[in-house]
Length: 274
Image 1 (cartoon, rainbow, N blue to C red):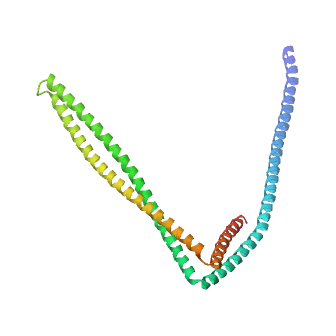
Image 2 (tube, rainbow, N blue to C red; image 1 turned 30 degrees about the vertical axis):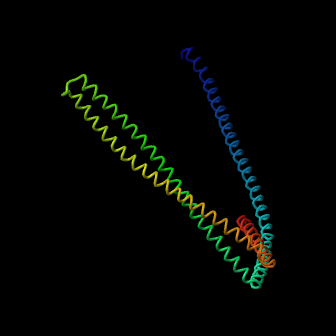
């Protein structure tokens, strides 16, 4: 064997062992690093899960406390509603007793109250009709303005077409194709103007009708409002001139009714929270 081949073989063996050892060490370090990364990720996920569990637990505790407080407030609300109902029943009994003691005054006040209700219903109907007619009047006014603008534009187009025809008639021959085309355009513009004027007439008629209807509905609403005021004044006058016992019983019954409705609304709101 030649000497330089022996030297190469002697140097190649330690080099191979060194490379293998380096690869083993590097693989071990890479494996330990990936293991540490996986462990850190698992730890962070566990911490996040624990934090979410803590938040959910606190929310659950808060919800239970809110429910307990709502249930605690429900009992006084039920008691208050029952009390106000009892007060209302007693007030109605006293009012019926006072009405039987004063039948003429009670009948007159009932008639005045019915008149007030009828007047208010009529006012509501008249008010809705007046609002509808006012909206229709505004729409008719918009349509009238649009029709006026269309007529103005159509008239301008007719004037422009007439100017073109006049120019061609003055400067060119009578059998010119341009003159014939201009006459056709002028005829079309005149037809468009006629249609625009027809629409304008219809729009003005619709506006006059809507305006008359709006004035009529406004007057009807004014009369209905006056009727409401008159019947209300009459009921107040009857209330001030009726016997004191009946007036006091009616006032107490009205107050008890308002208090009972307020108590029932509070009870309903608290029941919705439970």
